[in-house]
Length: 122
Image 1 (cartoon, one colour):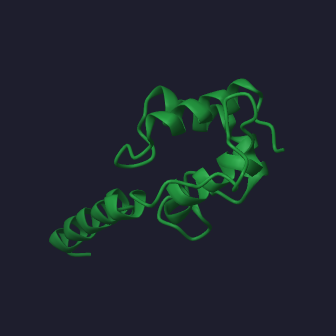
Image 2: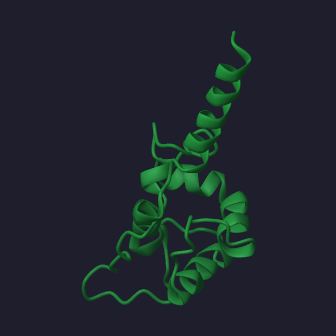
C-alpha cells in the first residue's frame, strides 16, 4: 500500500471518529417531565426523567449503529443501570459527556440524585 495513502486513510479515520457526534446532535432539547408530575431529587427515576435525558442527550451518538456505539450503546434502562458507574464518571465527575457539555445545572442535580438513589427504574 502506498505510504501516503495509508497516512491519509488514517487521518480520515481519526477525523471520522472524533467528529462522529457533532455539537448540533448534542444540543437537542431538554427532556420534559411528565405533565402534572414535578420531578424532584426525592422522586427522580429512570421512567420519569433519566430515560428521556439519555434519549435526548446520548441517543444520537450512543444508539445502536451510532458513531459512539462502540464505546457504549444506549438501549434502555438495563444498559444504563449496568454501566452506571462509568456513566456517572464521564457525565458528572469528568464532564466529558455529553459532547459540548449540554446538561443544565438542574439536569446534573437530578441525575446525581438518581445515582444517589441507586438508579431506580420507577
